[in-house]
Every structure is written in structure tokens, then in C-alpha cells.
Amino acid sequence: MDFWPEFLANSWGREFVAGGFGGIAGIVSGYPLDTLRIRQQSSSSGSAFNILRNVVATEGPAALYRGMSAPLASVSFQNAMVFQIYAILSRAFDSSISAGDPPSYKGVALGGIGTGAIQSLILSPAELIKIRLQLQGTDQTRSYQAERLTGPVDVARSILRKEGLRGMYRGFTITVLRDAPAHGFYFWTYEYMREHLHPGCRKNGKESLRTMLISGGLAGVASWVCCYPLDVVKTRLQAQSTSSVQKYNGIIDCFYKSVKADGYGVLWRGLGTAVTRAFVVNGPIFCAYEIALRCLFNNGNIQTENTM
Image 1 (cartoon, helix red, strand yellow):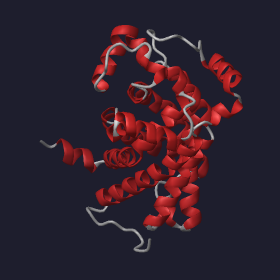
Image 2: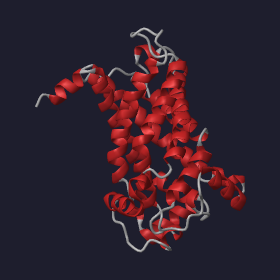
Image 3: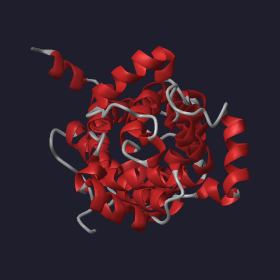
Image 4: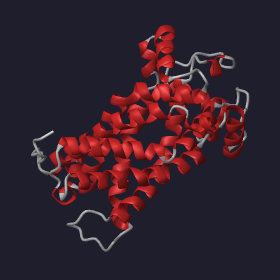
């Protein structure tokens, strides 16, 4: 009965809860665009608009949200862990900063890199399940998938039954290689842009909602641009299963065969959809996080600028 009051009495507990609210806001706002990105990366079906029109016509609008329950649960927890780990690491990497001052930019970048590597342990299985669901019904999976999997639990059971626990971590290495630098850019860009747009806000925490939205959106864009080719490779590797034709035998092989078949442009296929989604998603993530955090720290009194 006393768990939540004691949990929220600690700063790390409040960081955790605020991060969870940010994760929920991000998933709900950007999931359809994520589905389009995954389908663009795994096939050569054309533009995002053509894929959108085809999905809605043949599978219905609900297909754009297929598999959302897995990341909604896991990403909320993952986002909570990410912000909590980042809050710890950003100060641990630069102990010269006093407790009353915001972390240095060096601490922010290094803390982000460490956070990205650690959170891959949670994210890799969740993204594998999400990708399998998002690609279900496409030409890539229809040829070998005899059973229709109805949700994330079914997909997880199918993977464990056919591929074992190791199968749940298919693509783990490439996920770490993608997420470590991406999170470094992510948090650094957010902290730099919010201070640039609203000088002094890193210390007084009184930036406007507009500053949060723009800084968060640009942070998301920066994190995707820096690692996008790795994300394309990750999607293609995780789309494979033991029951499908093994087109790729690892990260380097996937790079080589993808470029050989479709040219270097394939490594940036779907980038427009990804950065659009990144801006749409990460503005709300940071807004929800910052507002929830201030609400928890100030007993419901949210201190932000009134101007948008």
C-alpha cells in the first residue's frame, strides 16, 4: 500500500514515471508512420503514400496500428528506464558538475551513448516482435508464414518455439550499434536546442511548450539521421526467421547484398517517413516527460512559459 508514495518520494522514481508518460505519448502519436517506415525498408513497394494507400485498401486502417500493444507496454517501460538511466549516467560521466547545475554537454552525450547501449536489452526483443507483426501479410512473409499471428504474445510464442531464446535477440548487435550513438545525439541535441531557443532554461526549467516541442522534434530527427543505414539493416535482419529464406548471414553481408541489389539509396529508403515520424513523436515525448516531471517535483504546480 505504501509502495507508490515511497517510490515517488525519490527523484529517480519521479524520473521513471515521467519517462513512462513520455513513452506513451510517443507511441500513440507516431505508430502509423512507424508502420510505413518498416514496410518501406523491407520492400521496394514505392513511396510512403503508395504503401499507405495499399495498406488501407487491402488490410484496412487498423493495419497501421498492428502490433502497437507490444511497444505500448514495452516502450512505456523502456522510455521510463531510458530517462532514469540517462539522468544517472549524464552526471556520472562528469562528476565536476554540482548537484544544482544541469549536466554538462559532455556528460549529456556520454550519458546518452551509455543509455542507448543498455536499453537495447529491452528494446531488441520488443522491436523484433513489432517488425514481425508490421510485416505480416506482406509479400516478404506471405510465402513462408502458414499461420496468422494475431498479436504480440502469439508472435513471441512462435519465435520461442521455432527459434528459441536466441531468436528473441535476433538483431541485438545491430540494435546496440544503432542505439548507442543515436541516443548520444538525441539527448545532446535536445539539451543544446532548448538552451539555444530559451537561454537559461536548462537551469530554471521554465521554457515554453513550443521550445519543448521543437527541441524534442529536432532531437528525434538528429538521432535518426545519424544511424539510419544501420536501422535499415536491422529491419532486414529481424524480418528473417528460421522458417524463411535466409537472405543475409550477418550485418556486413546484409549491407553488401542490399547495396548490390538496390544501390546505396536503399540504405536511406524510408528516411523521409522516419524523420517526419521522429519530429512528430519526440516533441510530445519530451513535453509529456518535462510536464510530468515538474508536476511530480512541484506537487502539481507546472512551471512553464505561457507562450507557445
